[in-house]
Length: 359
Image (cartoon, rainbow, N blue to C red):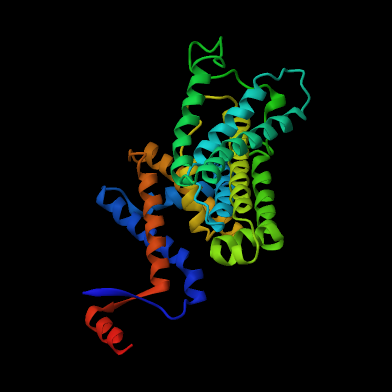
């Protein structure tokens, strides 16, 4: 019988190595799964970890997946560092897409190219407004931000469904539930001859801003102190209300920006299929990246590879789409296990009892 005993000191090297060990465990488990399903483990792993980066076109597709994951995960990292548990980033992503789409459908072919900035700003404010509902309920009524933000995801999805089935439905869309296709003035510029767009540059710039905010600003310092020790933050005179509102509004703005870039980029219109789970997958991205902007950049690329690999495994190997979720889950649980073992160690129950008795 084993028990967990807290380590007297957490190894810094072990903390850094933990995500890499978790990735290795995920690779091994994936290889076993492919073999159990009667598929070649080497070919299956190649679909996930080589095909998405094998050429320029593949990397362009990877950037389209990584951009929303990176933006949302950066916002969630700010929240989680402040000990504010925003689980409803998917709803803020959807509402950002709705707000951006609401502006985009009213633009005309003669609109200036600068109009896309107005569309993007609408998405940012849409995400902030949706996150502000959670902040208001937590601040005024002491409700759980976990439950409120999560329930608001379904509200946002229903609002989107109502709009594309009703007032924003394309009258010439053959009765499909979708808005009109956005004009060129409402679309994000592409990069070169690929499908990659300027959203990737915006996401990387946002990562830099997030790093500066968390590590070089007084407001970021207040958030980190509030997350590490609410009592210390209160003693220092830091406002818990300000930390709550700042964290949720920043997270909502990031998710809303991701939603705006998604509909003005690869999608190009509003459809009921805008919510694809980026807001929930970004939670894994944030924790795999250690809530650090640089780590989140790397983990968003990894998670995007899992998304693309899952699609390739579905089309080329005939495997179910749920395989992507399985690998994501393995990665998260492996990371949790590795992190747990950096802070605790396994000891025999008899040895644990003798140590406790001696102390």
